[in-house]
Image (tube, rainbow, N blue to C red; front, side, top):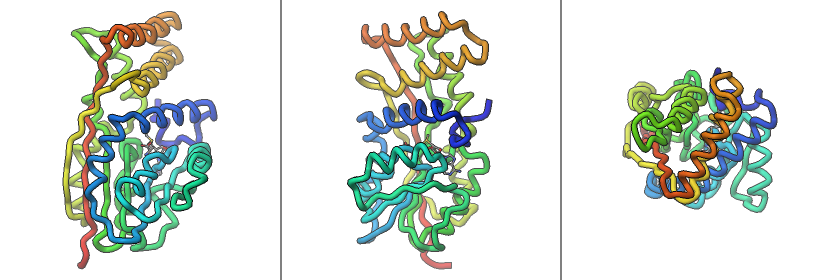
Length: 270
Ligand SMILES: C[S@@+](CC[C@H](N)C(=O)[O-])C[C@H]1O[C@@H](n2cnc3c(N)ncnc32)[C@H](O)[C@@H]1O
């Protein structure tokens, strides 16, 4: 199956809505907010700066460009009309934020017009990520900043012991939902080839906390998908979902993934 995030607009509305709910659950988890803060807080943008998120989904991360990175205005570009509508509705009271349908490979932004481009868990879903990097280079002002953060997907796990069956769902979901597992291990070569200067590179460990809302969406969607693809019978899928909830109730649930962020700058001259 192809990664549904790579062409969300072509998915059934119900699938898009379920993905939007999962995205929102993830954006709002304190551990995820902390990761974004770690790499956005010290970017040192000029006064009055304009920031754009490529692949803005439900818009919560776009808002960080104002509230954390300190941009004066922020814009989100996203191919799924359902996501754009959700973001516009949710942030209707925030005049510094705007959202539009578009493709990060071909935006309608002017050359050298943006101070900061953000790609938060976008590139792992894009076949041909080079085209997105090239577009960021085009739209950034000289000295402008590119901030990229994505999962290091091979590290995703719910395993608490050898042969843990719950972990198979995580492996399956990564296989089904990620186009390039290795993007953050390949990104520095791509950036330097397009002329970016490399800045801070950081690792961020994400441990599911509290109600593990996001990890449960992964397990539920993965178990359902295993039924659709004929791997599991429905009752087995439901039993695995129940196992996750029993672990949570008994304080035995574990969910983890590493994220990696990379800051880069478009050179000021040359
Ligand atoms: C995992 S979501 C992340 C959304 C948001 N950045 C967040 O962290 O909540 C990836 C998003 O990238 C969008 N996307 C995929 N291909 C894209 C492209 N070529 N241009 C712009 N966005 C794209 C998807 O529709 C999806 O909303």
